[in-house]
Amino acid sequence: MPYRGAHPPKGSGFHRYVFMVFKQAGQIELTKELQAKFLLETNRPKFEIRNFAAEHNFSPRPVAGNFYRAQNTDS
Image 1 (tube, rainbow, N blue to C red):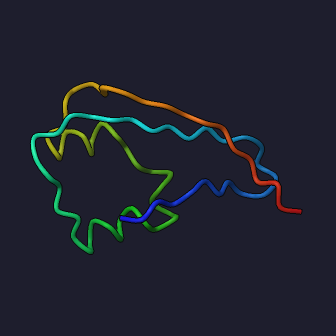
Image 2 (cartoon, rainbow, N blue to C red):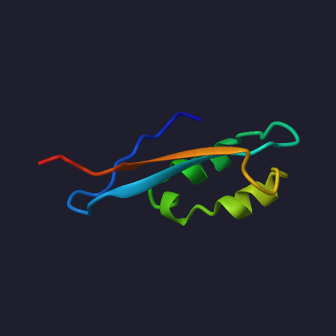
């Protein structure tokens, strides 16, 4: 699945973006349906990492993580 960079709405200030790394039992088959679910802009704010981790048998806690803040500077 391709990376989708930050693109907060214009005039909405800073947004925090979080990356978390989990151990997983095996590979996840990224079906077209699953990819479409995460590529739709309307679905991204509703994403629940706890649910996704449980559905795909990830470790109960992340093993690493990072974050950054971004804002839309388009004029």
